[in-house]
Amino acid sequence: MPGPILYWIYTILVNNKVIEPLLLFANKKDLSTMIAGFSYTMLGFLATIITILFIFTKTPNFEAYKRNGYLDILFTQYFLTVICLMLTAGMSVYGYSANPNPFPFRVMLMLFADNIIQIVLVTTIICNLARNSQTV
Image (tube, rainbow, N blue to C red; front, side, top):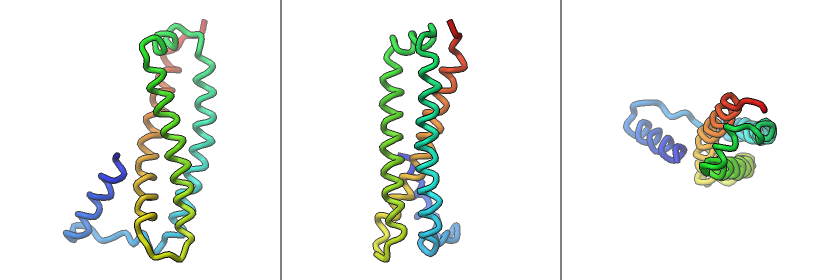
């Protein structure tokens, strides 16, 4: 839940005039385009990185990872990341609407922050698993 927490901190800082507002809503079309591009690119990246994982399925390290139940946790996090990226891409379409309701745009920003953390987490796990694996 880093997205809502970061947005909450941002709101407090702006309301207390610690920082100036970023005027996100003034540039919502450009920001929506950037976030949609990020979402689609990361979906492709995740499709690529999961294939790297399948190269190491017969290694002892992968078998131990699977035996300890960590592989189920990784796949759960992986699928959650894919779903969140798809939701973010869907929410980015809202940036092109003329509706002044800020809630969907805020949700998109929160999902974007969550996506960054999720991508880092999944990538780190898969890279460490690949690095520690020894081919048979």
